[in-house]
Amino acid sequence: MFTSRIAGIGHHVPDRIVTNDDLSQLMDTSDDWITERTGIKERRFFDHTQDTVGNMGAKAAKMALERANLKTSDVEFIVFATITSDYYFPGSGVLLQRELGLEGIGAMDIKNACSGFIYATSVADQFIKTGMYKTILVVGAEIQSTALDLSDRGRSTAVIFGDGAGAIVLQRSEEKNKGVLSSHLHADGRFAEELYVKDPGSSRPHEERQADVITKTSGFKVHMNGNLVFKHAIVKFHEVILEALEANNSSINDIDLLIPHQANLRISSYIQDKLGLTDEKVYNNIMHYGNTTAASIPIAMSEAWQEGKIKEGTLLCIAAFGSGFTWASALIRF
Ligand code: ACO
Image 1 (cartoon, rainbow, N blue to C red):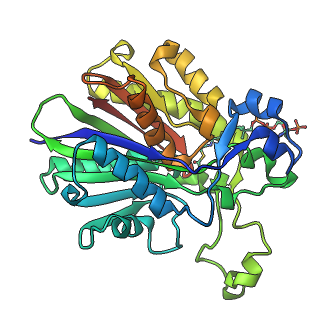
Image 2 (tube, helix red, strand yellow):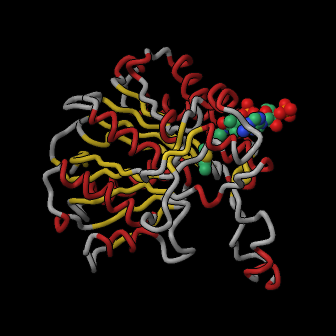
């Protein structure tokens, strides 16, 4: 039986920093409100002249490959998590493949929002454990700023999201009890419309799908029932972390680092308190990037690795909750 170890981690964020004060110029909000309710101080917004989901993913992937001492040509398969692919179809996996010059290898997209990166990691892990591939790129990247309503009407969602990309290289290993120990995936589609972007959805009367009609509606913008999402998130985060620990006969004290999806600092702090973890054991960078959906966890993993918080032997737990609703966790031994 093979195991899949994380050989390298990388990330890339756009250059443009948008502060809470910048958003206050566009809508009725304030640095105090955003900081108190979310912990966010700034986020990155893409530059349409240079950034795409595919090329930001490629920059993160190149960093991960370099840190893994691997060549681009070692990659055999791509799993790309995003809800904001550059085109409605095809997905961004093929665009990343093209950016990297890897014509011919398989590439797939995962559209599971904030849980997308953990779902993607789980898919790659299964391919490696069954022996199908040796080296897989797992990427999470988003450009969400274009789906935000940057006016008073959209202020409760617009202030939390940002753009960015993160990547890991998963590689076949034969070392026992290392790498992705287990992953746990869940969904409850009854809540699909509580956090969604409706358009360009397919199941509409033909006349509603005409471009001039869609652009006049708010169907292109993020709709989120923030309170309801918050209430479900704090329950499911906790459950799915305990599920991962139980599956590995581990206890909360065994975790060296928890990286929760960066949705809201209040959600992370609530989970941290409920699990009784110290500040050193929970990594947050939402202050700088906001919620970058599928990119949040790999960006945080990359920065935690840079800061020496992830090293040989570290037991890392990653967990996420988001649109779908979907939620997931994984336990990883470095
Ligand atoms: N600035 C100032 N005031 C605001 C803003 C703003 N940006 N947004 C809302 N308000 C006001 C509201 O109008 C409301 O005013 P009222 O009391 O007079 O009616 C008040 O502030 C409170 O609004 P709430 O929406 O109740 O604020 P809440 O504390 O719930 O915070 C937030 C909103 C930050 C969105 C929170 O609900 C949240 O983080 N939810 C979870 C988000 C999440 O986890 N998403 C999942 C991942 S994302 C994905 O999957 C794509």
